[in-house]
Length: 95
Image (cartoon, rainbow, N blue to C red; front, side, top):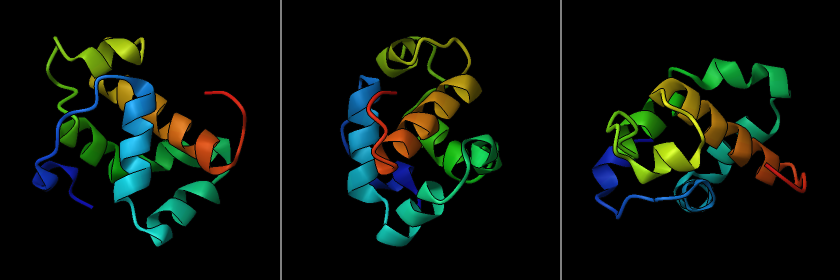
C-alpha cells in the first residue's frame, strides 16, 4: 500500500488517520493487522509504518497529526497510529 500516491488531504488527528487507513487498506491488509498480538505490532514498523510516516508526512515537525499523536518523533507517532488502527479493528473501546 502506498499512501503517498493517493494524493488525499492529510489527516490532522489520530482519529482521522485511523479512519483514512480503514478506508484505504484492503480487507486483507486490515486482517493482517487485526490478527497480530499487540506486542507484534512492532513488526509493522518498516512496512505499514513507513507508509504511514511518509504518506501522512509525519517527518514534518509542524504536522498537526504528529502533535495529535502526542509524539515528537515520526517513528513513535506511526506506532501510535498503527496501535489505534489495531484497537479499532479488534473492537477495543479506546485508543
